[in-house]
Image 1 (spheres, rainbow, N blue to C red):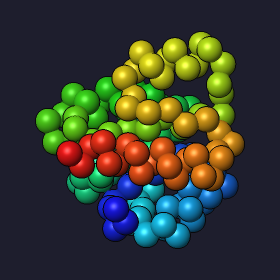
Image 2: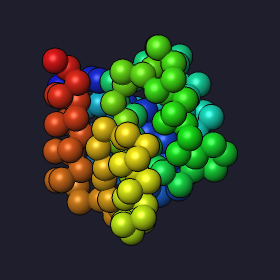
Image 3: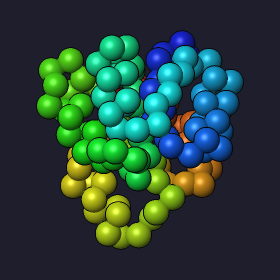
Amino acid sequence: MANELILVVEDNDKSRKLVRDLLTFKGYEIIEAETGEEDVDLARERRPSLVLMDIRLPGVGIEALGRLRAEVATRGIPVMAMTASVMARDRQRVLNAVFDAFQSKPINVKDFLAAVEQLLERHRR
């Protein structure tokens, strides 16, 4: 369902712009952060329907997920990991961190949009 708020946490300008453009075109409202600290603050303040998070962020990085899960106000927000690193070790880090979904980069537009919609749909119930 369009008009939902999605927080995009990505330190790479080009990647962030691509995700922003795709999601905006589909009718989602986007807010952006470049660090894990900004991620937690924005999620707490704005309560997005979904967080899309690069796992290699400056600052607290992937630990931001733990901070989101530790707070009552943000623990129910689904978080999709996004990374260009698809090594088995990194995929295991993502699974161990208990992300709700995983998206490899560079993204396949069709698959990415389908994954976003599926994750949002799963959490609307």
